[in-house]
Image 1 (cartoon, rainbow, N blue to C red):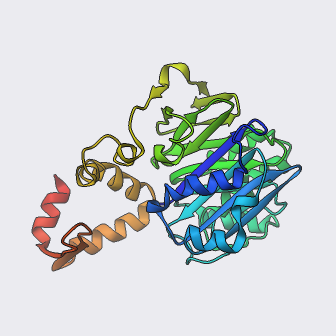
Image 2: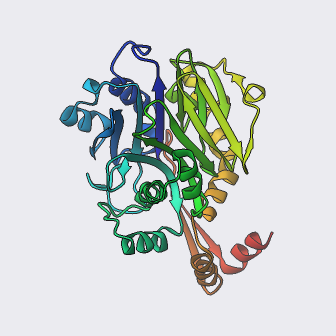
Image 3: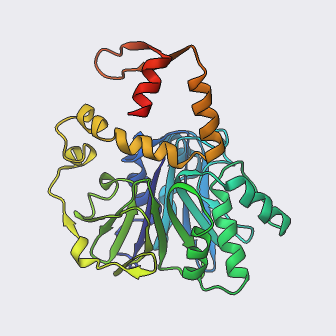
Amino acid sequence: MCGIIGITSLPNNLREPIGKVVRRCLERLEYRGYDSVGIAVIKGNSIEVRKGKGKIVEVNARLNFDEVSGTTAIGHTRWATHGKPSDENAHPHTDCTGSVAVVHNGIISNFLELKEELIRKGHVFKSETDTEVVAHLIEEYLRLGYKPFDAFKAALSRLKGAYAFVVAIAQEPNRLYFARNTSPLVIGIGNGANFVASDIPAFLEFTNMVIVLRDGEYGYIEPGKVYIEKDGVPVNVEERIRLISWTPEMASKEGYPHFMLKEIHEQPFAISSTLAGINEREFDNVVNLLLNSRRVLIIGLVRHTTQALSVITCSRQCLVSTYMR
């Protein structure tokens, strides 16, 4: 999993450079990934990107996120999936023109076929990630004359897998697009500034008014507006707003009394997210491998007070019966 944040604000509303705000929001999401980090800020007709391999404190010391000013920005802290941890594979990812920037949490299962198609059309890729295809897809539809929101929706219609996206497009300097399919995404509604992030603690110091997005929903935020759609039908935003009374510590546990209980309740989501990122052929290969195995070893590290290592040995029959149930 990765952590993503998007912010769009009225000028001077945040009272400090937006790069610094994004950096602080990302620090609250670093539990979701710490291989690399980056930010992108809309600057006139272009997008400034600063990103690199390493933890937030390390990359910020090199690139100084805190000095970057602007009113609309996105950020990402990465747990590497497609592509090794590197400066090139760090998010945000941009299109050929540098006018579309994307941050992503999840896995795009059909990215290779999309990448090959886009390369044939002349697109040049700079990373090994699945995420970069999204920026180039949007660029392709913009090139065909689509308006930005239509280009964003057209790109989404081509994607398979699990994802949460935030997208900045330079020609719309006060708007950020978002979409959720399986991977978590929440909106924070502030006073003259709106947020979209992987988790509530990212923006809790700025607002406790929250909308939890549902699978299949997409839309955009502006400094004074939130718009959500599903299957082309607008969602009533006012009915979905929740007032969060949690402290930042409680928010990180999402209301559960401790992290272990939170993780137990997240297991169905974790399984569905994993399955959403696997195409049918790969899934069949894994199932056949398990069914034909004589023994399966499940190894896990318990990272609590005992730091215990547990090894569980299951027979094939036990595994299959559990799977069938």
